[in-house]
Length: 481
Ligand SMILES: *Cc1c(COP(=O)(O)O)cnc(C)c1O
Image: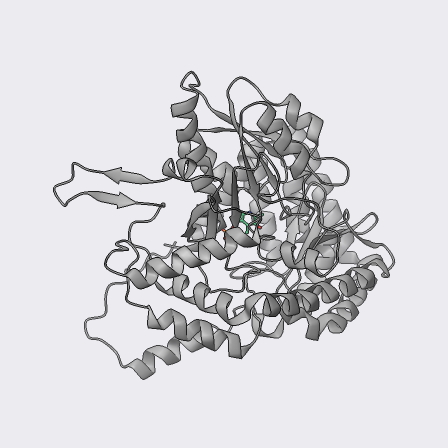
């Protein structure tokens, strides 16, 4: 944390100066415009960005907190929700809201389930939800926020939810089950039909998390690729989430949360009637609600139409298949499971994928690292069509480097082995302190180190997951004031 005191400048500066400083601040940002990042940004074209920006700024000042003051925003939200519901097999009863993202949508789904069960199953004091291990951490955030215990069930060898194990995890306290369509880590669709049937059998609510797939899988299926049932056409699915700001290609932050019935959605809403400031209704987590993202989502859905989404999805799927084939053709590399869309993970039996990620980083590519098992995450989208060959060339080169033994690798292997040994003879706290020292040394000066493989290796040796959580909290602390 910085020790100098930064206060509001005494005098304002010029617009020119400020914008120049902001432009310069982007210098070290990831070059998403060049398709160098897999995830985070879902860009189609400048033409579409311009439409989004125009719609966004047109409603830049408006506030969705009071929909009666802005019937425009109310119309946009209602229509975006309706179009999303229709896309996801919903009938006239399906209703919902626009939220600030997948996380808020999932927070709302869990809060709704908790409050629904308070009314309909009042005997439950310590509510639980049964989740596949691959479910998004936003469920765990919701668990922490709302006092619902998250029960994680290991997935099958194909990375999909294990139906019988999920059934076995149900207790008299279970209020909610969930599955993903698809899961973020490996991009595979859980057996939603089977899971939702179990939920229905037990009188439980069931959420399909289609945050990443909600605006893609319907088009993937229309294009003729196999997609298992996952939406409201499946009996027992009571709520769904779909992120506008992912494969909906809308502006951040925007997602849709949907419920099968208005009765269910009522449990999401908040009303306080005793405030001196007046009666205060609020449908979702936030108070003030930005108009821009709602307007931009409405504009884009109407601009693209089904035809536009199909065209984009076709390109994305062809690119994803091309990349997957290319990856599998590189000796030692593979794609995990049998992913339905353009989200998947690269793994290797023989090579350390963290070293491959480091080599790719040096070549300007940013891939997220996953564990259990170690793999690299890919969210392929429209931008990647133009860079697929370049990426495959660099990936092959990276694998070539990693395959060869080197002094650096031997050194980091030695460090990992010695950390392993030290944890057996020293108190854990000392070892973690030592390891963060070592990792900062390995990384060289300032900021995040360029080679992370040794650090991931060291972290893997931490005997206590609690230590790891503290280390990450330290990092989070140090990132912003
Ligand atoms: C991205 C994602 C989320 C969380 O969405 P945010 O918009 O990042 O809050 C939840 N579930 C899945 C499956 C996701 O891919």
